[in-house]
Length: 165
Image (cartoon, rainbow, N blue to C red; front, side, top):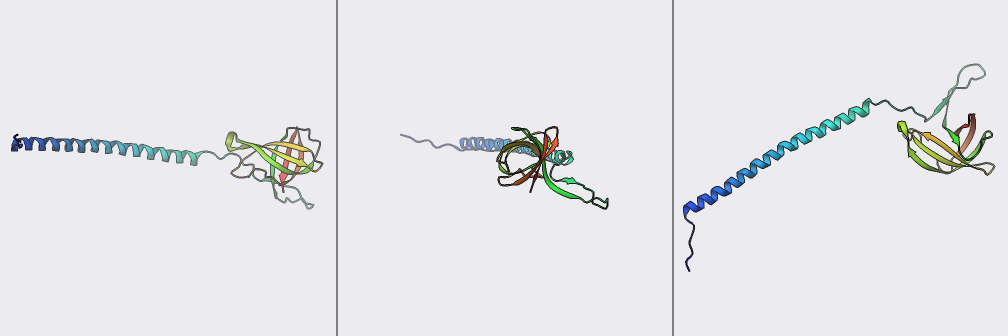
C-alpha cells in the first residue's frame, strides 16, 4: 500500500483556496458592519425625534390642586388650596353635602389627555355607600386611597366635588 504525499503545487492551490475563503469572509464581515452603522444612525434619529416630540407636546390641563379664592372681611383675596376631585355619584342621588371615608378606589383606567378615570367607593357618615366616578392626572394627584377622610360637596347638575383631608 503506497501513500502519496501531496506535491508542492497541490499545497499551493489548497493554500490559495483557504486564503480566498478567508478573504471572502473578511469582505462579508465588512459589509455587515456598514449595515450596522446605518441601523445605529436610524435608531439614534428615532430616539432624538421621540424626545423632541415629547418635549414639544403641550402639557394636559392639571386637576391637582384647585385654588379657591375667597374674599376676606376686608375685601382682599386670600388664596387657599385643596386636594379636590370633580365627578359624579353614580349609584345614588346626591342630596347635599356629606362627609365620609374612602373604602376603596377601583377600576382606574387611562383616558384621554393623560388623565385616569377611577371609581371610589365612599362610606358616608350615615352608612350609605357612594360610588364616585372621577378623572384626574395621576402625575400630579394620586388616587383617593382607602382610609382617606373626604368631604362631598354638591355642585349642581349632578356633579360633586370631593375634597380629601
